[in-house]
Length: 201
Image (cartoon, rainbow, N blue to C red; front, side, top):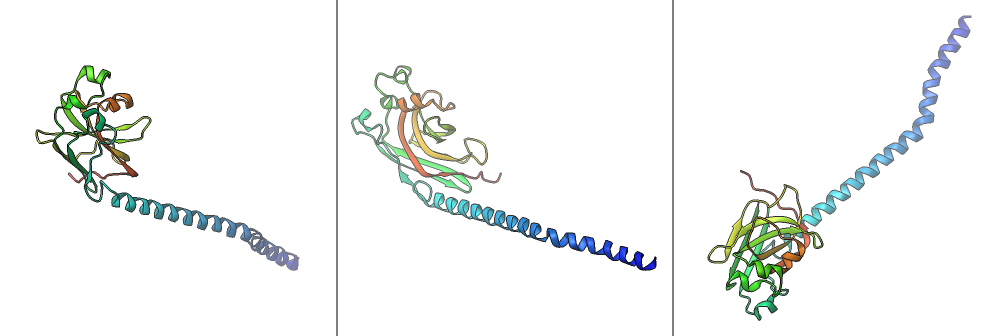
C-alpha cells in the first residue's frame, strides 16, 4: 500500500513536468512571434524617424524657399512680384515675405465667381491633400506683404503638405478646391508631409 502511494505521488509530480515539456515548443513559438513583433515595431519607429528627418531637411522647411507662381502667373501677365516662405517644425513657425503682389483682385481668375465677389486681402494657408484639401489660416499679409504665424491652423499632430497664398474676402474660411484655385496667388507643395509641433506656452 505504501509503495502504491509513493508511485502515485511520483506520477503526480511527473505529470506537470511532462506537460511543461510538451508545451515548451508552443512557448518558444509564442516568444518568437513576440520578438518578431518587437522587430517590426522597431522598424516602423526607425522609418518614422527617418521620414521626420527628411521632412525637416526639405525645401521650404530647412530654409526659406521662393514662393511659386507657376499656376497663376498668366493671370497677371508674368508681373508676379517675388517672395519666400518657410515653415519651421519644432516649435512651429511660418514666415512669409512677399513683395510686389499688388491689388488682391488682380489675381482672381477671369470670369470666375471669385472675380465677381472680389478680394480684400491676402491670406496664407497650410493644407493637406489635393482633391479635398483640409487645413486652415496661418495669417494674413500686412501692408508690406509679410506675415508670421506661430499658432497651428488645426489640431495637434495634423500633417500638411502645402503652403499657399490666396486672394480672399474672408480669410477665416479655407476655400473649396474650385474656389481656392480661382483665388490662388502662390502655392508650394511639400514632397514629404510635415507634422509641426506647437510651441510651449
